[in-house]
Amino acid sequence: MAEIATIARPYAEALFKAATADLGGTAAWLDPLAAIAANPQLQQFADSPKVTSAQVFDVVAGVSGIALTDAAKNFLRTVIDNGRLSALPEIAAQFRALKNAKSGSADAIVYSAFPIDGAALADMAETLEKRFGRKLNVSVTLEPALIGGVRVVVGDEVLDTSVKARLEQMKVALTA
Image (cartoon, rainbow, N blue to C red; front, side):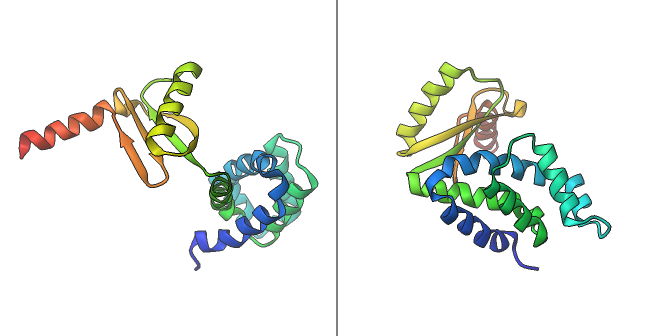
């Protein structure tokens, strides 16, 4: 079977070309749909031979809780009709990458042991943008295992200033 990224690429590129006028609006409905499509129970439901494409569409659209535009409905129907619902999270990721490349920005995920308030996050985002040399779309994910500090992932670059990473470095240094 083809790699999921290979399957998702034509869909992401077509959606990007069709939505060039409103990339932000498209991302606003694509990301929630991708999160819904990642649900294993929904994928099992969609893969059932007893379920029609229309039923899968109704479930996904109903669960989303957002008002889908005609373009969103057409895109979702196309993905479902072609049996590619499981590729929707990857389609969204590739669409985001295309959108970021056009705007000269990147997604940054900040893993933190504790919640970060708005002002501290804004300061951190400014510092990270200087460090990585580009505009960043920052999101925070809680990860208590870090003990303290943060780990920042921007594409394939990682900046790890967590207590856990420092303890690992000390362990390596002491056992060497």
